[in-house]
Length: 342
Image (cartoon, rainbow, N blue to C red; front, side):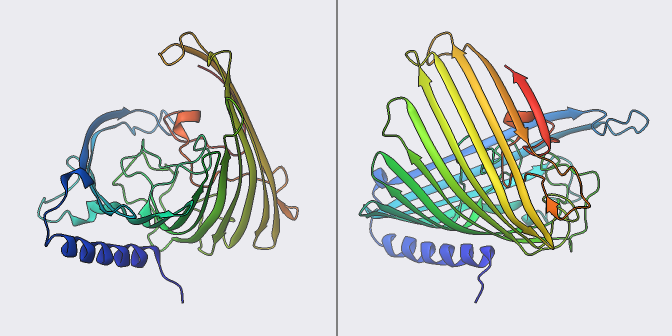
């Protein structure tokens, strides 16, 4: 039996509400309660975003994102967390009486701790790993990204390993967030993606001033259409094997990162054979304070011959690209050679 991500989040919410109702009979311990929020109002102006000066496509808009969260430590072993989000564009609604489509649960999970070295997180949650080149929360977007799933964390101090299983259902962008994965044409709502995403990410910090992070990521895509890679990239089974090294030297004046990944699997009748790499080096004038010179080079393979039996375009999955490749979000860690100075 397959449980959708929305159904899983609903089950988690029902369980959490039941627990809240149970503990509400007694006075809540304020030291266990965490309440917070965010109000982000952002003005944007875009002109000639399609690089075609003949077409008048200037955009001027204000995006609004409001987040409210509450967490409660029911016991030292059980934590409940909710984060509601309202995302909209000013002036985009014909009536304020019908705006429920913009209000959603951004995060909502139960977390079981003190299971030996294990921590279990069940429900809708953000996931951020490494430089967010493959898995990130895309906080620049007015909507952001979270995952419906189960995550097991194993932590011994020197070694941290996360294992997760998540489901994603992607529909075409309806215009609520013009910063979210721009496409030349917007597919219809029926053009959706049913995806299963599971993997393992390990961080070893037993060496001085260096972090070693091997990972294995699996993406099973049973949908149709081209919201991820291109119209041919459907019914794919993609495996990503990668390693990231990050560290500091010379009393933290020097920081460096090196990451490489290889992808295999299949898309329809084609075999996936793609790879990517990134190297970053920086010098900090005063460690811990602003003032840094940096250089970064990113490379990712593309498909030089679409007619053969191999699919060689590297796919960077669920990233936060704009912090690496520009705020227009037209470029990702795929089919690229990019040299950056900062």
